[in-house]
Structure formats: structure tokens, C-alpha cells
Image (tube, rainbow, N blue to C red; front, top):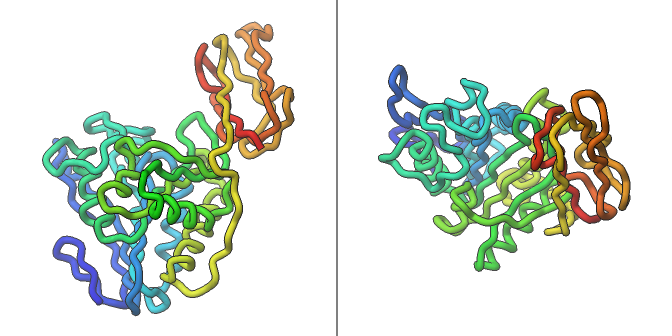
Length: 316
């Protein structure tokens, strides 16, 4: 069965790379890239997004590898890949926001076709791709100055059938934990708008791109495709912490953050995980964890201000 994006018809058993036109900026037309792999046989449709936050690059590389490696002749259904949603932020190397209207791309879904560029991007993502899908994966890493362990966010909903599907899909990833978060203009709005499961996948720092983080996103996506019957093979299943007790540790003083741990590292109750010193090297604060657990988020910027998050730790 053919698959259509705007006036482009993608026949069964073929792969197509193209662009969706979003709108006019002052000097150019804003476009969004996509790759559709329309399988030789009928089946389910999966959409995978990257670059919603434009400097989070490990998922982008993973999506390019998926586009290169998946053979339409071996696909039952359709795989929609959008490697870089926020192309304006990607070009400018800016975190979070689209530089044309300074909106956070992951706070404006489901978007608006007649609003500013960021909201138009969100509208076209949902209208062109997500509306045709049985499931959505939104792939992220940490942003500038951050690093995160392998984790998955699923979305709070009263529809326990969809919530259960999100947990099932999350089990395809070799992640440390699953956390439930609120739907608030993020891609999780797909749960409300289309009634489909949506995962937000996290792993790694923005750059340099770590091969282990690329492989995590790639392997997890392949596993989801196996689980959904889009490609052949038995999906590996993984067990994760679900909604563990987590605590934010923050800087009481400004200065230099001298961390002693890495994301994903196991820590013991009372263990010193870093300190903050002033700019003549005097220690102002020692940071100790409140329980046995795993570091899930880490500030990697060396300079800190009072109130900055230094790390999150999940009880385990």
C-alpha cells in the first residue's frame, strides 16, 4: 500500500528522503527533513523524531543509521524518520529554542499551522507524520552543560491501556529507569490527540557524540520495530526501575563544581559526589547523596550559581 506525504507518493517496498516546507523566514524557506521507509508488506507505522532540541545529536546519528540500514523489502508497515525537527536551532547550534521565534520546540505541541515557526513545525510533525502512526518515539540526549544516563519518560494519562503500551515499548530499551511525566506541550500530546503511545528517550551529552549513546538509541529503536512486527526478529526485553524515588541536589553557593561521579554511576548513601569551591579554591559545599542509588542527571558545566542543579540521583 502506498504512503503519502503532501503530494509525494511513496510506493510499497521503497525508501524516500524529502522535505516538508514549514514557512517563510526573512531570508529563506524553513524546511524539515524526513525519511519514509514504506515496507513491502502491510503492517504498523512507527515515527521516530530527533533534534526536537537541536544540539542533542546522538539520536540524530542513530536515525541516520536507521535510514541507511533498514531495507524496505524486509519491512512490514512503515517507518517514518525525522532526524532533525528543529532545523533552525540545528543550523545555529542553539539549545532548546528555535532562533526565529525563541520558543522551546518541545513546549508547543500539537502546534498551530498559522502561528510562528516553532508552532508551525510542531503542527506539521503531528499532521504529516504522527497522525499516521501507531506509536511515537521522541529521541533526546542531554542539552549543553548536561549529561544524562539512559532513561525513558512516559506520559501521565488516565487511559491505562495506552499507559500499559508505553511501559511495554519502554521495555525494548536497555535503560536504567522509566519515569512518568506530565503532558505539557511536549510530544507526549500525541497520547491525548491521537491516542497512541509515546516515549521520550534520553541518553548522553550533546557532544562529543558517544558511540555507546548512539547504539543505545539505535538498538532500542530496532527492538521496538521487532516488538511491533515491523521487522522480523524477537525483541529483547529489559527490566528497569519504574518511577523511583529521586532527589535533586543543588548548589547552595556559586563557584566551581568539582564533580566526582558520572551519569549512570552507582552511589552509596552518604557518599561524597562532588564539591563547590570559590574562585580561590576554598571549599564552600560538599555534596553527599541521601541514599543508595544511581546518578541520572549530571551538571557538567564547571561554573555554577547558587540554586543550580548539580545532579539528580534515583534510589536503587
